[in-house]
Image (cartoon, rainbow, N blue to C red; front, side, top):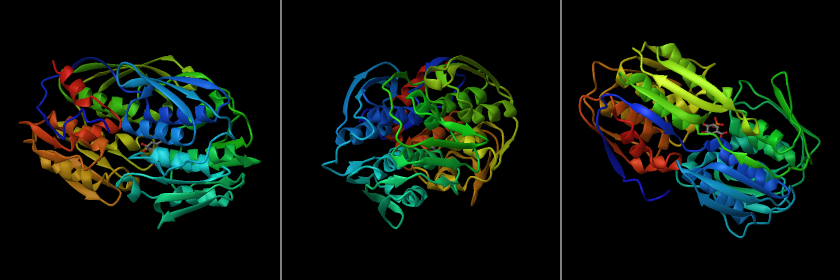
Length: 435
Ligand code: S3P
């Protein structure tokens, strides 16, 4: 994490929010482009790469695997990254333990790539990541013939590279990280690797594999690849992260008389379910898809405030907006009651996002009923404001900031520096949008 952001930040109530904003490059897509570029036979250039700490962890791990990577800073918390790919069989045994930091995506996707290498590797992470469940990737990788040792199903992981065979697999959890780990292992496996998900999750890995020249069979809700295909180097551009845009979208929807445009943001349909919820609640949401570079639709989003109605999100919708549920809870500070069910997965994120979200929203003055698989949040008039602890979780820090905008008085976000995981500069942007 960069040391730029302070450990606590005071967030004043907002009168209204106006303006145009660009958000950092999409975190999920940045990871995937870097990983696939490392496996390609030649040099790829990735513009718009996220400068968040998570995506930096992926680059650091790849460097430890012998991949040459150059970075040059660009505007709006993005970088242009040049990756000299080593080919699918060209990674080197790491001389040190690979550190994924706070990033579950780095750990789970790399585990898929490393399972089929002709060497051993160890993967660890920070205290939060070391608490997160890894059995969900270990099980399918072992079915493919891999060997992964863990600490009671949690990191650190010791991956003993082995020849792999393709499998047909139905993950027991709806998780794009699990799907991606298995598909990436499938690149190095003999024969076909096929997955059928219980509910659709973000499909960036499928789109990125196709962009790098790997045939992907997507038929009837299943996805399959055949191992051994070469990856071709590419010039790529990462759209803005819709999960970062969600904080501005929610704030613009909820703060009266607001009008925000978020430019050049990713609008992949597997990531836009939160916008549907905002519309359902009564916000005006305009979406203009203007390009589809790398197979990823992107464009501008304009959000105007409305008088918001109560909203409920249930199990069918959850996989499509799992990362937006904290900021959805924050909407309750502004008026509508918010109810979420079927989201027990939230307990396995960077924090227990049900308990820690409830604690922070209550500190600001919102009533929250915590449930095993979700929560109900509502307010009794404008919340007084208070001190909310981000609990080491970037999305909670930003969600509490959005809740704080509705306060009768200011709030303090403790541990606010953690926003650097996905959105360096978040609080400065917030101040620039006040009108
Ligand atoms: C991600 C998938 C989701 C999401 C995470 C990023 C990805 O996790 O919460 O922030 O890039 O594949 P799960 O796959 O565990 O649901």
